Every structure is written in structure tokens, then in C-alpha cells.
Length: 108
Image (cartoon, rainbow, N blue to C red; front, top):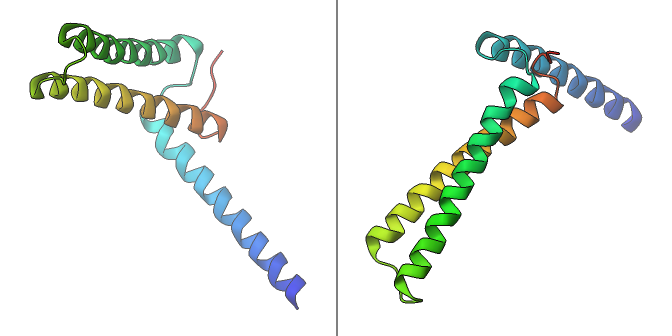
């Protein structure tokens, strides 16, 4: 009886996974092109630039303040840079996830 339940639940989960894959492919294909090195690279470069801006700002603050506590304005600028970097990084990681799951078409 336990084996039957396990088989039934595994079959159910497999059906759900297939339905999720179909839904994701259908929805994502409406807004994303086929993935190529050429159209992924600009997003990766954008993430690198935002990371660079964030870290450069942190170093600029540290150098200009000579180790003293940063001002509220400096922290606000640093926070904005971090949030921009983190959002772009999350988007890129999400893109990698959909590629790994086969939710988007791969181009040449």
C-alpha cells in the first residue's frame, strides 16, 4: 500500500512538473527571444558594471572619510548602488535558472 502511494505521488509530481514546464515555456516565449551568447552577454556586462559601481562607491566612501563613519547621504548612495547591482544579479540568476530548466529556446 505504501509503495502504491509513493508511485502515485511520484506520478502526480511528474505531471505537475511537466505542466509547469509547458506553462513556463509558453509564457516566457512570448517575451524573451531565443537565448544566444549575443543577447545574454549585455546583461552579464551590465551586472559586472553595476557590481563595479557598487564596490567603487564603497571604496570612494572609505577613502574620503578616512575610516570615519560615512554620512547618511553616502550610505544612501551606497545602498542605491547595492540595490541596483543585486536586482540585476537576481535577474541574471533567474535567466540562468530558466535556461537550465529548459524554459527558453536556445539559439545558435
